[in-house]
Length: 205
Image 1 (tube, one colour):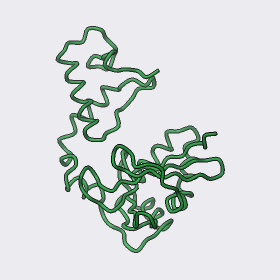
Image 2 (image 1 turned 180 degrees about the vertical axis):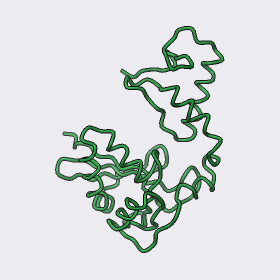
Image 3 (image 1 turned 90 degrees about the vertical axis):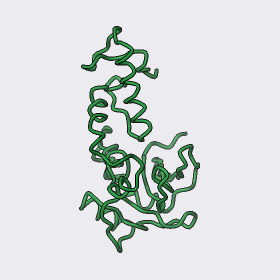
C-alpha cells in the first residue's frame, strides 16, 4: 500500500507526530512541490515514507544551483563535449571522465542522433549506474546494463511517447527487458535527443 506522507506528518527532526502545526505542514508541502517542479526525486526512508530531513537539506541548498530549467543549468549539466566517439567508445569515455557529454553517441533511423551525458544522480549515465547499484547484486546489474547499452539503444523498439514528452523504447534479450527513455528537450530547452534513463527488468509473461 502506498504511504501517504501528508496523512502522517513528521516533526522537524523527521519523527512522526500528530501535533504538527499548519505552518510546518505548509513548509513540508512547499518543499515537496519544489522537488516535483524541479524533477527531483523525493528522498525516502526505508519504509517508503518521505525523508523530510534530507528533503529540507536539499531545499536549503537550492540557492547554490542555477535556476531550474535555465540554459545555464543545461550547460552545467552537459559539461565538456568529447568529440569523435560513438557507441561503446562514448560510454567508456564518460565512465573514465565521470563528466561531460558526447553528441551523436548513438544513431537510430527513426529519430536520428542521440546524445549521451554523464549527468547527475537524477539523469544520464551516472543516474543509470546509481540506480543499479541500489539494487540487490548492484555491481552485476551495472555491468549488465553497460554491456548492453549500445545494443539496446540502437535496436530497441519504440513503445510510447509518455506524458512528460519523452520517448520510451523497449529492448528484450535473454529474459531481460531494457527500457530506454530519450528526451527531445530539457525542461523546455530544446536539445538533440538525449538519453535520460535506462532501466532493466524481467520480461513480463
